Image (cartoon, each protein chain N blue to C red):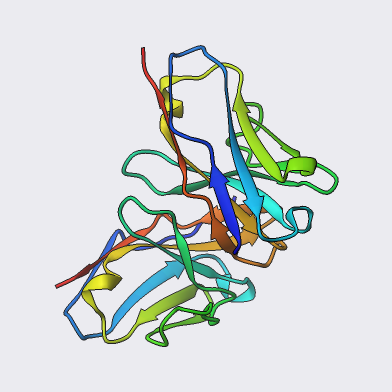
Length: 119
Length: 106
């Protein structure tokens, strides 16, 4: 069974660092791009960026470039997104999803990780 | 940058046909994917590459894409179809989502 399992909910203070994870199983993790998508409370889906774990080729949305870092450890089939200094506006649900190629859909999604940033 | 425009909401009577549009410049030249998201759940793809249904998605879900508009059509709408629907394309190395449409089944 193909699964993307994300790390658990986080509650952080502004200025703190955070790294959340997404572990793929049931498929060749290095064959698919792993993407990250933000959904702020009550809002729509926003693409953050993606990584190809085979060679760590990484792409970012202009809106998120410089604000987050996407990485992966192919040895454990896990992708990450991290923040060095969180803001209250980073409060959102974060999803990982896999995609074979640029013209393909997101055919599998993680369950989401809720990040709450509050003082 | 490329933009996708969806109506904020669409209502449909139980058993009738709902149509959700996704507008974008020359979107007919792109591959459009549609996702359904129910409250508290992750999105699920219901159509890929304009017209293709993944396994497990009912035949009631169909799509078209031409000119500046892509359309998701849900026939014989059921209460369980009530959800948010998002269109998505890829353009210039960026993944783009529409703003989402809330489908209400009356």
